[in-house]
Length: 348
Ligand SMILES: NC(=O)c1ccc[n+]([C@@H]2O[C@H](COP(=O)([O-])OP(=O)(O)OC[C@H]3O[C@@H](n4cnc5c(N)ncnc54)[C@H](OP(=O)(O)O)[C@@H]3O)[C@@H](O)[C@H]2O)c1
Image 1 (cartoon, rainbow, N blue to C red):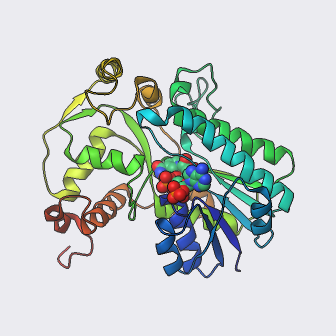
Image 2: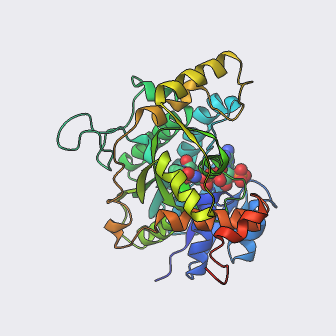
């Protein structure tokens, strides 16, 4: 069965993989790009049709959506730099509102919203206490974690999706954890985090959920072929940064000396960095943006994701190896390391 798809955010990491994977599977795919060039170039070469336009232009979007069966909304501002805060909270929900209202007007048969695992708060009580799963409550402005602008932006965007659902849009939601994988060309926040762990001597002693971008794309395609309405939390594994660093050492064949900093120390250092206007380390986001990472400890349960779709997650080590190999081949990490972890190396 072929499904005609329209993907927003297709010039980005996650949306690009969704669009290319769908095209490779024989589905007609269109991507809305803000401009020609950039991420749009590789898409056209992969058989994806690129339309240049503005996601907030209602007439343009309704017309584009009139030609397709499934909308995949993956456009958002995924940024943690100091300057991004207010922009992230304003832009991402506004984009969701505009795109989903156009889908309502166009009568789109199925909209798949790319949300995030970050919208969910761990269960506070009961047998699943401390666990984050697809039935977890969302964070609210009363929670300290709301100080994370990206977290707030994704909850607000998720609420836009709920409103569209209530108004009759047939919707599915996909909630990935930190996404890594090949072709993370900018790289995004999650890829940059993995790269930073490669060489950092001081690492926060925290835990996060991870998944592979190809698994997200496979999940979205499987969902596109199903009746709408599902919610899927996509997380292959919940791992401490200690474990992530061990995996990086295994994959690269190096043994990096690292100090693991307790959460309280990381929080205090981030506060000092805030007072210095970010001058101590420009890569460290404001203290308030670290609330989720420093406060969340329990399992992020991805059983509602690929397993519920009859698919299997790629092992984390394979995702790390493939990410690093791609970055090495493209000159984004020390090329001398590239041969150590390139799965395409003949003797591996
Ligand atoms: N990467 C992760 O770890 C992760 C984890 C969970 C959820 N997600 C979600 O997955 C989605 C995609 O993330 P990503 O990692 O692929 O980010 P990305 O690489 O930065 O891609 C973002 C995409 O959104 C587009 N976009 C941003 N602002 C826009 C605007 N105002 N108008 C039109 N297009 C706009 C970008 O277009 P340009 O190319 O023109 O900039 C790009 O195509 C987001 O919803 C993100 O929250 C990502």
